[in-house]
Image 1 (cartoon, rainbow, N blue to C red):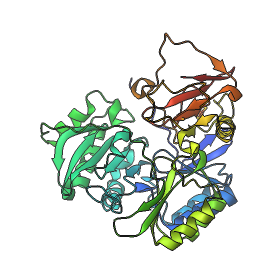
Image 2: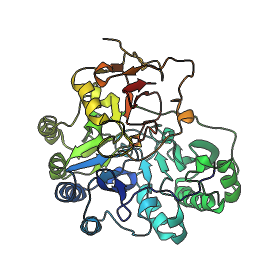
Image 3: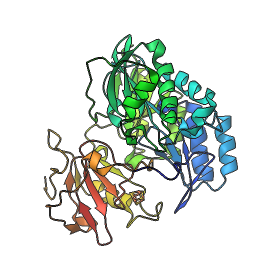
Length: 423
Ligand code: SF4
């Protein structure tokens, strides 16, 4: 299928007209946020929007009900969150959140601002679709399985694999060349003139870009899976300091909570799993942070059922939604019907349905590719929200598009006109 329209991904300067009002998406390359920037986002959410900061599946953030677009862009520009008016929507860069602090083969965070600057400096790259995703994985395998378009994956301290269309190309490059090769691949994607929004949608796209780059693949290929080990709780850094990983219920961070996080005055990262990591803390302050923020709803417990549950925007944010899926998902967690998985995690479609004892970045997934396609022989049963009991990772959707669905094994709970269907 060839796209006939340009992508409609929102930004700060091009808001999405959602059912509940204009929605702004703010790109955070590498998920990095300075405390002062979080404070600005919190104030914008509280004073101009609906009071929440939504974390997206690409480590970006969204603000809803943004009726004063001029005030928003002025505030964000002042905080360094709108460094380019021409390239703002193409700065989709995710990187291993813990890189350089805990494990990993190489620190990829140093490459993020270089890649971001290179994107902004190339006038033509403003033509990239807002869906194109750049990935930098420090070798731990948390990012390369997210299905990006152009990326690198550390294979050692001084070597990266070039990743195109979510797969290892077999090409190995040095850290010094990594950014230039990714930028050249971005130009190559445009050179193909496919009209597609993603490199993975282009027939033989990765090989054709490799040909344009004039690079030769080697024989070895890494396989990437969708990792689900969200960094949660107390995380000892290699340098003796502490990071704290915290999940956010359904990815909606209240502005008031965000202000408390900003007041910690430490760098933080928004992860692609709708969570955040507060870094570089000493032990005693880290303990106090948990004491203050856990009662405010931040989740530091890796066994929390909230880690199993995601949901699209649903009503009232999306006109296509059959119901308020976020309210129903919340009720399922709070009543104990959304349950932690038995170990090991069940494969897709095998979650224990009915057993007593899993914002939207507007990423519409390819259901066939994700393993979410329904088995035509399977009986379709419609349940009321109160009768949905699912163990393990689950994604609640207001309609068949299943926006924001995580990759990997996930049970789909899809709202229909008559109730929920569990796929
Ligand atoms: S899955 Fe459907 S209801 Fe949910 S946000 Fe996407 S289009 Fe809207």
